[in-house]
Amino acid sequence: MSESTNTRALRIVALGGGGGSAQVLLGTRPFFAERTAIIAVTDSGRSTGTARMIANIPAPGDLRNLLATLAADPDAVLPRLMQHRLRSSAVPLLDGMAVGNLMIGGLTQMAGDIAAAVELARQMLGCPEQILPVSTANTHLCAELVDGRIVVEEAAVRALGKPAIRRLFLDPPAAAYPPAITAITNADVVVIGPGSFYTSLLATLCFEGIVTALRETSATVVFVCNTTTQPGQTDGMSIADHVTRLVDVLGPGVLDVTLINDTTELHPAVVARYSAAGLHPLVFTETDRQAIRALGVEPLVRHLAESDPGYRELWNKADTIRHDPQVLGLALWKIALDRGKP
Image 1 (cartoon, rainbow, N blue to C red):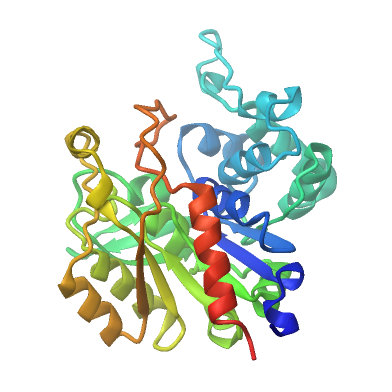
Image 2 (cartoon, helix red, strand yellow):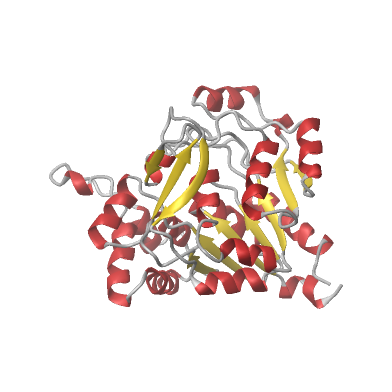
């Protein structure tokens, strides 16, 4: 085993939103010595959007969620406080506000930018991973739809009942945070996903420098496909459609592997519950296999989903079938060993 595939030397980067990146990094703790998250900052949902307006900052919500989840003791008072949502009938603007969003806003004003604020919070919480915003720019995600209409800000990009998304762009355009580029360059494995396909995963690729870094890195680039479609984003898309859209953005020869959940073990009652909410399990077919391989990407199908936790009430977001961090981490470690740098 070469030094690059030695467990103690492996470096992994998780690119996307707060929930999916947490699953990746929690699962890879036993296997990768250096673990870095590069997190989306264009959310404009209710709590995050309000915090952005109050403090004039990039979106803190995904960063806050990741910090609290990766804390040395997630059950301690500070990480629980960061996730706590205020109840305020007297001040409707703050009703439902995650306290951590305001904390990151205050730290940003104290420290000068959101990257410095996140590092201060990471130290306070004892997170062993490096956590980076994809950019320190306060910009918004926008999209052109297939009917030619332009929708502005992330909440509109993922809105229900609209035509499909043709392309994403930032307004104003913005560059990636330089340490994020460095992390991608130095990684052994870069993981895109799981997470909101357009508003977290592809959103991070909109920042100048990220796609170029992915094209130039010698890391193995892995896409962890979601377990279900996402209302307002990927309605009607197959697994191969997800991979095709990602390859369209990255260019040929960049994406190496797609990790796909095997849905055969999902209980029919679980499938029915999510389908009723508009989230349909993504089922891998032979057509998907052929299409993905034709793109030069290796499809790996594994049982990756967690055991059914029951219905979870999420703030302003749809629940989904999540990946099991331990199983996902083991799969990514095996990819690193099998496809290590020469």
